[in-house]
Image (cartoon, rainbow over all chains, first blue to last red):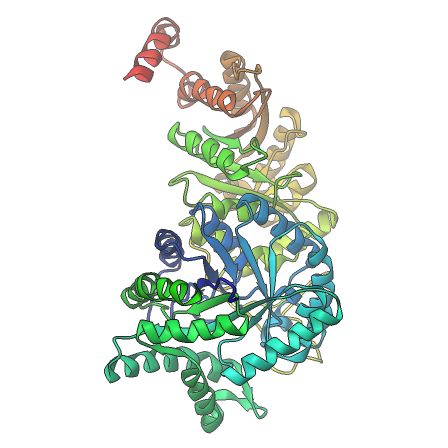
Length: 317
Length: 294
């Protein structure tokens, strides 16, 4: 028996990039408009992101952004994909989460992650090395509270242990291939079973429906390349050097993102999602690569709602 | 004079609905600003302000927060709330558990962050960026991004203990309900003496309680007299009213209706023309009733 697969859409960052300039207040207005659109389409959720001190204005307060979306919708769930929980003061975060949970009638999905940019931790006066400990302490606090569902982001053994042992959800990153997904699910389930708990499985997936043509596929790959290359090149250290200074490794990262993405006609995407559901995935956050590409983003939203989600229900039933 | 309203949690089951109803009604009636504070069981006011972005269009939203939280977290939440509301946020800071000095440091870091210039803060409590030895890839100076939607996001300091801190920084000081007329007069006299002409650019807000009956009825004449007195004595120009007494949301909204017709018009001029207030007493009830039916 396959669990019902919930489909969320991501990832709203409210960035004004060099390629897609924009006005921040307008981007936040667009966020709410998109949220109402996703709600009308009947999909489960919309997910917002967090980063700091970056030129494009990447949303630095996902809980505040989530508040604005929850205030603009009635049924839609809103997720953080992800909230950099170790950088936050955990008592303050607990207050914010309790309030969002109550304000929205339980519509917040709390995705959390360690983050990786040292410059962000340092900006907040923290050593990046303490992030694991701070995550554990915060999760211990939040897991006991009456608050939103928690999804622990990551694929490392530690992340899977954190989720499994507390009986939370796990949010697997977008770039895993099928074997890695199978392994991660087995790992997190074993952790949960050892602790006498059950665990929810969520997954991000770069997703772009096409008309099945080569041109469509090329266009999607280019969009994903542009999304990945810029921040991976700027933020990741690849073999101890900034990403852009290691072009071959950077290319590998980009290739990996493209290879593991769901790019293709709706029926193909639906079949892949059905396969994930068989593996036990309950929530897929389809990462649309829609930053700045308003028309493409809206088209992808419509296609997923009209042609992917119903096909999936049919397969699941 | 502008009027504001303290937005209160009235519906425990659906907290947002009651807050939106108050804010929207106040907006339609010409209130300039809605005031949000963190009093249990209400939550962090910057999140609430963002949640009101959609239910309101023009009213300014003041989020009153304690000066004890991490100032960069506050700054990040504030810029998102300001952008989400299309530039309608005012950030009000009160002294919290970290005391006056704690709030002072938070105010300084917020001012640096809101400037959209690279900054580096070295304070008693906060270092941003810290440039910790354990961190390798760090910046010497950082910027808050995205910038606030407003070119100058209003940062107001609340309560007697922060009056001098506000003055030193050329920030508006909010007289709290504990800061009665004589206190406010003394503070603003000092501010004028010390800042000279620069004092002219500061708003002079105050939080004031209005007692109503359970059904929201209130003594409009007394309220007008009180506001005029404070306006005359120390220049109060934004009166943020906390309604005490209405039984439920409807009663609160009725109180707002009365203030909009019986108070707000009478504090927009330095003095009212002879006969106009008598004319209103005679005719306004019927006109309001006619407007309600139309």
